[in-house]
Length: 584
Ligand code: FDA
Image (cartoon, rainbow, N blue to C red; front, side):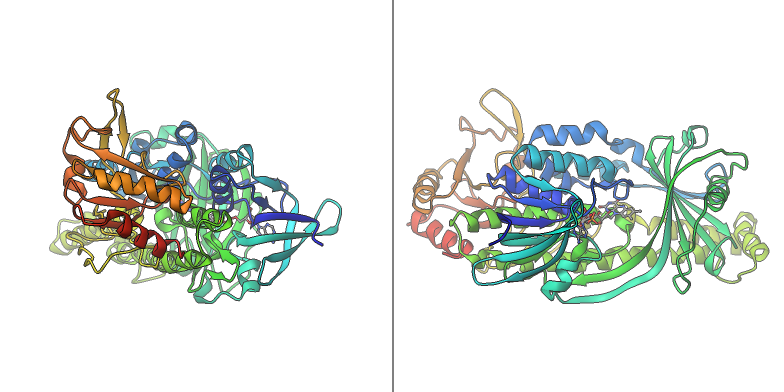
């Protein structure tokens, strides 16, 4: 007999675990979430928070989304990604990033009701965790996962209560490993991985110092400092990241992975801070120093029976593109509603297979992208002439040569410009963040061909209602003129049918099938003098069906199925689709 029973046990209170607990609790379940430490993340770690993640927070509630904005550094301050020789030093180039270029800004605004922002993990985790606990999740800190065994009916997990030193057993219907990059759950569940851990060494130096005099003319979250000869392999490139404008900062600095991690003392940390800021007499307050490794590994299986892994447990990669915490939270958005429906008996266990089918390709995509983004610094080093020599004097001469009045120097200036501009794939890759299209048994395409991408799929989001894609956002207007997003009237743990004038049969079908399936299935009619108005015509342009057609949207905003117009038996058709998706 286990000490504790729960429907879902979640190991880890990071972005993945806390988000999943918050979602499950919002869907009316009482999951148990544990953390081996006494509190949440104490260093800022993740910060770039993309629109899709903000949509998950918005789905949890406008209060949750608003609280995130309250603590975040707003998007407009994120934008001047700078390449320089020191924070107070010469600038080599810069690029507008994170949706702040006017063209990208327009794309962002058209794509989502939510905004990208910079929210350090030390704010994101407490927000998600508080949401989870205040809505009914149970949490147990200082409790360490040790092992699990699963059988036909559930999972028995053994944990260590680190306060008493005693073992505690938990019996759950499902177990979620959201236990980070060294996941024991993934290892014990026998998940398979591709790639390699520990491909490069990095250290974080968190410090406080007022740098506003040096950055006010080029506010950014990221400053890339190139100092010839200062580090492993001769190129000292350090990242100075704004944590709180403009007095708290994090330096990311490399170390040789072939050597043991260096013991970084305060004197070393201060030296790095002074070198990279270029302010020789700066008196930084060093808050913490830690080392970590760059990984290049993703799970090819994300579940085994009743055990599921998510977040860094399933995708392990460098912070480039800021995809880690974002993808972790989005994993939770994919899995939580499925677990809730299976636990409530509204869906068969087969629905859970779609988690792996839908998220494993995302894991591969983001790990590959993040590692490629690191390689894409190479052309900048090359163009600056930093790869030809390890002699710092020669390297500096090569870099200085770009200022000469010669054809070679003009060529070099062009190469530098192009190499920096190519970093758009790391710093403004809206498509990577928003274009995820799922293929699984929880999506019914009925053979409709997938629309190709008209522009670069990594850089630009392309809205479509093709089943599997995220429902396009457009603004609609309610009875009192209130402005709501198509994402606001869908989601929230429910299935939704969207139709228009001529689609009354779909409304009736949705009502009938909600009763028959005992599920939350609501329907909205959009059109003149209807429940929701499409005054701008944006919805009519985005929906890719006729007024009388229907789009079935899943609780995670992804289109499950669509039909172009009215048909003879809408109830029978929707029943077929729901039976397929819900594995009934
Ligand atoms: P995470 O590691 O955060 O949490 C794991 C949890 O499991 C913790 O609560 C831990 O205590 C717990 N745990 C582990 N083992 C356990 C056990 N045996 N028993 C009980 N509990 C256990 N991402 C991003 O989206 N945008 C960004 O800008 C950045 N930037 C960034 C910068 C830097 C410097 C770093 C190091 C990382 C980033 N990231 C990022 C990545 C991001 O921090 C990372 O992807 C997420 O924290 C992953 O969240 P998870 O919840 O999956 O794991």
